Amino acid sequence: MLVLITYDVKTSDREGRRRLSKVAKKCMDYGQRVQNSVFECILDSTQFRRLKYELEELIDETEDSLRFYNLGDNYKKKVDHVGAKPAYDMEGPLIL
Amino acid sequence: MKKLLNTLFVTMPDTYLSLDGENIVVKQEEAVLARYPLHNLEAVCTFGYAGVSPGLMGACASRNIALTFMTSSGRFLARVIGESRGNVVLRKEQYRISDDERRSALVARNMIVGKLYNNKWILERATRDYALRMDVERIKKVTFSLTESMKLLREVEDLEVLRGIEGAAAVQYNSVFDDLILQQKEHFYFHGRNKRPPLDNVNALLSFAYTLLANDMRSALEAVGLDAYVGFLHRDRPGRASLALDVMEELRGVMADRFVLSLINKKIINEKGFYRKENGAVIMDDETRKKVLKAWQERKQEKIVHPYLNEKVPWGLVPYAQALLLARFIRGDLDEYPPFLWK
Image (cartoon, rainbow over all chains, first blue to last red; front, top):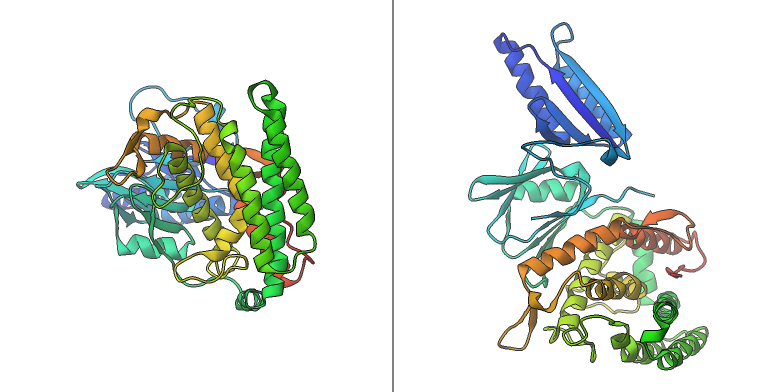
């Protein structure tokens, strides 16, 4: 299934910026960055739970927030892209 | 049934693959071309001289991602394997069967029955769908003789006899294979199988498709814990994945031959994509190879109902399903190996 992950991490102090880069790196491990703090990840439910747990461990819940949008298996009809930085299709042919 | 994960093909020779976190990163002169999370992949296949970092090799091995290196023409070079997986008891039983000619013959027989059955139905379907465009009578003769060969196979318990029947059936099937090519006939024709090197366009395509299928088959066998190098019909030879070739027998026609035919008949490729080297070998150009790989990946996503499991699976998981059934047979859970009978 496709999970869309967005986050807001408070970056006014050094600790916050450190958290931000950790969150970004973790999301990068699981999916592709489609916009600055927006990631699309193709996960099964186990992977999704693990990622969610790992991200919750990284953030400061009083300052930061995470949002997970579950787009299911038939996500292709639900996503439309306009403009620069088109994303690749993780489930289509990957040929370089 | 497991999920069919994606395969990454790298056909650009001047690239380097490395590991970053959980991502595979494809670089070309330090510029990052692409990055993909490893958990979405089940195989990485490189053509030409793409280099790979040891870190990535380790990561692929430990995650059971098949990492294969091939020459730009698609000839197999090397493969990275990690620890042996699965069950040693299963593998030892596999070796015992392989050492016993009669038991080997009984398994191999089912695989050959699968092959003849599937090839017969490829021809039957063609005569039904394109009755006006081919010599139906000639093809019917072949399908009849394939049926006869299948009857002969019932009693066979000897590998040599089995090979004889299989060989004769292959000659029959090959004799009408050219009839199934309906488009671009002046450039794509089949006058017999030739390989190492393939000498015409169709043989180049067939060789390439068989290599892709063999890679999938080999990874599937290893994923269920079998030894892909110890076969029943194909005997041991260093560096040859005999068991992968055995199971492939029943899948060659339905997965590779039909794939090649549809590339030609649907004009996905054309003769401009092929060139001939001095030694007569016919090679695909990069563009055509990419088209073939793309079509192969798309074909693997198409779903069918597995005739034995009665479950909807993508074509790409058929090698895995057969590996699973073979492992069940070797373990003693099934009385006979059920070949893939396509219809």
